[in-house]
Length: 399
Image 1 (cartoon, rainbow, N blue to C red):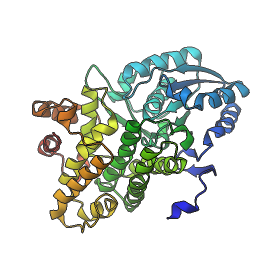
Image 2: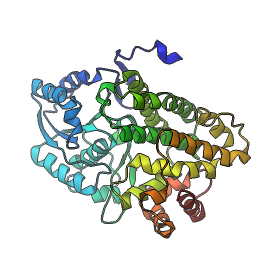
Image 3: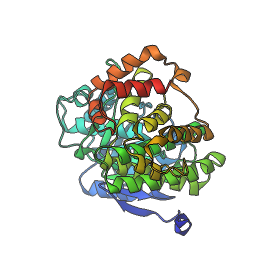
């Protein structure tokens, strides 16, 4: 019940590698951020966003005023979609270069921030393209400053070094991780998240749960990532139903946002493995597939696969979802069924067949999991080994 001692209206500064302004009303801190970057010589920025949310949440009114008050010129690229593509990044980078932007402000969920991180790299490497970044033809060591204004409680990208962008021509959805793309500043303001639809609310929160289950069970997991995972899952299980019942419940949004932010820190340390590695091919082939839905579909099969390898850790961190696990490897089926029952309880019962995949797709998806740049690295740190059999069985068990 420690949450009751927290005043959600107190805006706190949480220092990770990124300075995060966190709490109801945190969007007002953009005025301080704008003043700071102007003092650092940044007088032009590109604003990365989707088409609507940056305005309908009210975020843009505050950001635009802060930029104007500090005489910072701006240009807006508002074409970022869920599962952003290299086309978006290249278009925005050209716009930014032509305008003379010296920094990137991303407003939205993970997609605008990930695309914005990629644009920030290209501002420092004008001879490169988004395809160069995500084909790993070079390893960037610098990027323009990034400010992430987060509108969802799932991504974690506002406080870590990861970004994901899809190359539609190859059906590749790789992930990059570079120190140069930690945002300089981030804003997590729960009042900007109340307009998330019920589906978005479910999917982004499930994304946060997946982040920490993987980070707590990978080959590089640490006590830090395990303890963060335990708290993140407990908070999501407690507050997701409250946010679904009352979308304007700021306390619920606050603790879901905190869970997601710390989930980003968690996988910045423990990294990710099977669920994300196998989801990326799903949403690369079907770009309209919500990332969180793809993860939800795969999660029960992943838990079933890895339980024998990390029974004690999973029994502890999954306790809010599946009570009374003892850490015996024989409980794999019970743990998997418990996770699926929890997903159904928040109205996410789908399987792969429900979104248009069949057993005939398993071989192609497995190929993509191993051939998409970077995903083999995630599979290699999975606790159950890196064989094709492990990957294909997870897909089959998710049908």
